[in-house]
Amino acid sequence: MNEYYAGIIILACINLTAVLGLSLLTGFTGQFNFGQAGFLAIGAYTTTILTTQYHTPFIPALLAGMLLSGLTSFVIGYPTLRLKGDYFAIATLGFAEVVRLLIENLEKLTGGSRGIPSIPHYTTLPFAICAAALSLVVVAFYISSRHGRSCIAIREDELAAESIGIDTFWYKQVSFFMCAVLGGLAGGMLAHYVGFIQPSMFGMIKSTELIVMVIFGGMQSLTGAVFASLLLTSLPEILRAAMAWRLVVYGAVVVLIMAVRPEGLFGTWELTPKNIQSLWRKIFSRPKSKLSEGGA
Amino acid sequence: MALLELNHVTKKFGGVVAVDDFSHHLEDGGLYAIIGPNGAGKTTIFNLITGIYSPTDGAILFNGEAITGLKPHKIAQKGIARTFQNIRLFPLLTVLDNVRTACHRYASYTIPEGFIPSPRRFREEKAITERAHRLLEMVNLEGRAEEKSKNLPYGHQRRLEIARALAQEPKLLLLDEPAAGMNPDETQNLMDFIEKIHADFHLTILLIEHHMEVVMGLADNIVVLDFGRTIARGTPEEVQADPVVIKAYLGSEEG
Image (cartoon, rainbow over all chains, first blue to last red; front, side, top):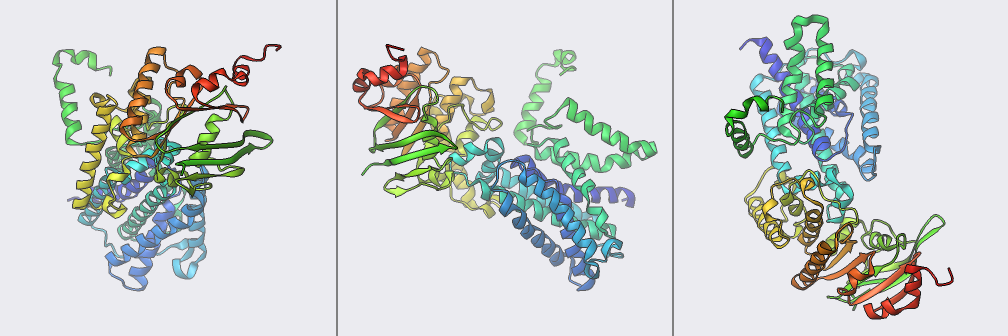
């Protein structure tokens, strides 16, 4: 396959992995995380330092990055997830900045703001696809479990969830842990695809880009998360012909979706055999009224 | 031994005494009511029992065990379920899933099994689903199991909220103004329904009502609150005849 297209797909899979974690935490558990890039950074630097300085094989290094990223989630989650309101969201915002500044200042270990060059390109196309697919399956299983229902209950009404015996703090923390682990995985893969990392890759812009994907696709839909990650990663490339205007178009598309369909493209709709069947029936049961359906 | 004991419970919000030295003993299997005008502190008592507030003073015992200061979910797990005055369902979940979220006693599979399913998970999920369907049949909502709960009419939402509380298999059920916003016909249906679940589930029920006539035929014991203080207690007949109660509801004659 053309290397250019393969690259776009790899990037989309990396974004998707990070977005899946975010979708579980923000979309399904209702906790806004504006600092996902911080977890990407932890994953990227841990994995890279292990592979380049300690010559650890790629997969153990990735696992170490995921674990460290996951453990960090407890440091932020433990004090803030017990509180109701926006404390958690604000803490994640600060957290990502702290991580970025730490990396910039731990020069001996991280190369400071100059970054780490010539990282081996371990993230191949099949690897990225497998990692994203595996993440998708695991998150999809979780959401359909009793624990996943508890998460959704917390998003829908935290007080009611607590009153039916759901340990809201613990479920929020588990979702946050998973979000951080997948962020760490995405970061590790990103470093070993691009071949170079520096702190500025993991700033507010990256966090925003990821949360926009979750909101764009539909907060309550994994299908939406997958679709949005694929579309919004490739959109700037598709629009490359439009040159400088492409980022304007990107922004306009996002604003348009939010204005026309605030619940996101897919809302709560999921791509399941049952839903496809009922959609099929909806479209083909009344072929005569096709014209009137145009407005819907 | 009483199932639930409230001993001299007081709750203050700043200078306002919402509940003043409230004591109550609920025997296992009884049907109790708390009535009183708006702002008398009825819902505050529910919030104290369920752990949403902790009392300024006094102790609450459930099954002889102190539950004062426990987290709401711990108290719920001990066997106290409730409904809310302004219905609190999970609006985007289906009717079935609303009930399934509360069927904790039918599943014990762990969080790792949530990510990577085991045979036990599928077995227990099946049991949960069956249980939820049975409960929906009992509240006559089986036909709407797959609808989002926010799309149900008001009366159905009330019944769904009770079904969700029953799914917890509680020993004590707290109902916060279940008849609020209902017409006399619906109210009568609801009261029959409450009597039915009281018998079928071997429940102890404590219910809050605003309207005295609603609970008269239902409760064996009524406590009347006014401005946080207990002004009367006893059987419906005793309470109804009490001049203090009449005064609280209608105002004094000289007034």
